[in-house]
Amino acid sequence: MPGPLHDVNVLDLTWHVAGPYCTKLFADYGAKVTKIERPGTGDPARSIGPFFHDKPHVEHSALFLHLNTNKRSVTLDLQSTNGLRLVKRLVEKADVLAESFRPGVMERLGLGYEVLRRLNPRLVFLSISSFGQTGPYQDFESSELTLFAMSGAMIGEGARDREPLKYAGWQAL
Image 1 (cartoon, rainbow, N blue to C red):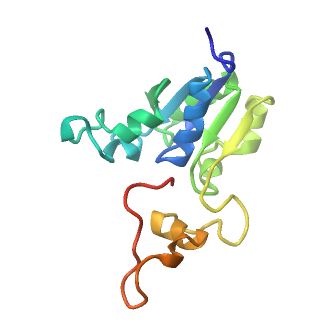
Image 2: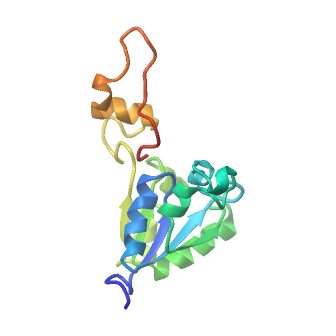
Image 3: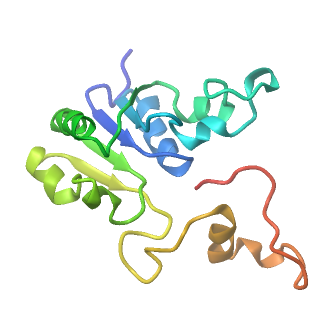
């Protein structure tokens, strides 16, 4: 039986954890999700363990495999003319585009909201960033430590006279 989102096409330009988890939910409910990965390294989550048989490999990351279940993946260079042309063709057929770049990156690539809206007026544009697209913190660098500090989660961690301490394991970025 097809899922409730079986007729929804999602273009996934997200990486690490928060964005891929969002698009995983679409895929889990039956949407056709196409993940765009950068040439060479792909999604950085591919290099985060644990790994199958404890052997690090880009195809064996449990985190990456969990976050990208039920998705198709294609490698495109978004800084190349051909890569941009192909992404724009995919946008024309998409219902949803999810991205997790820093503010301004999509515009610099020539894929800002106004451009995408002209290509596909019905497109739902999801922008997932640690500190938002506007406001006083929009340009802050994001890391687990920064996010813990900004959220208040570090209040009971570490000691005043020592370096900051982070929680064990990977948290959503």
